[in-house]
Length: 169
Image (cartoon, rainbow, N blue to C red; front, side, top):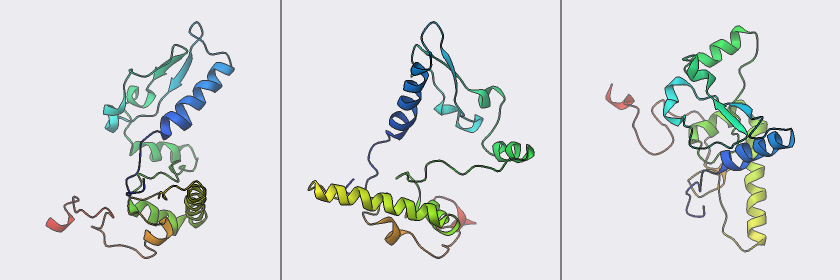
């Protein structure tokens, strides 16, 4: 948003749930023949699991909960199969902390540049429409300008607060 706020959390609904739903229906899922949808919510985020949202052509299951798997177990399990641990998929999420952007800038510079380009493209189009700019951080400035290029102190979580307890050790 123009005030630096990240806007609404509609990415999951717009770019996952609806897209997958259209694909499922196009490939035969229906109330008489529902598709099984496995949602990867781990035991330590059980509060996110619910059955409020589902379509008649879906059967929602939570395999990580059924197997009592925590988020920290996932990389170990993936590596034990000989597979590389995939990165998080939300490479342009406006809810990232500044430290996440900094890590991306350092470890995945091509992806960081892609996110900066996306932000610039959005703002060029918004400018052409006479609208205020929006940014991928809450700092109301371009991503490339607000993301540090050097390491921050270990207690700097990038959001202006100190909730880690580091200062009190």
